[in-house]
Image 1 (cartoon, rainbow, N blue to C red):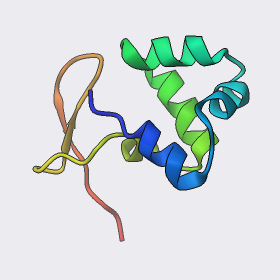
Image 2: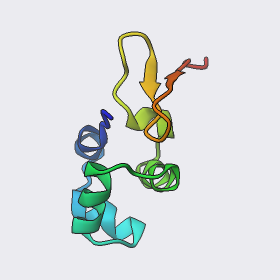
Image 3: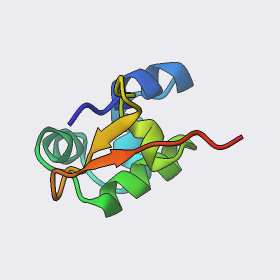
Length: 81
């Protein structure tokens, strides 16, 4: 899974530790979750804390798809206008 959380934190001027505090977890717990297989609930909380959508947490794939972290299926991402 190719998350762009570090990139988004830098863009928004937020430290990793600050994000963890917003989520009510320790920095270590957040890092461990992101290294493993974060749940959709965790991804939704992170997206909300960063003011982005869940798909924006993932690095765009050349084919505009991401791989579901739970089932491994390819999900097509379409940008709405």
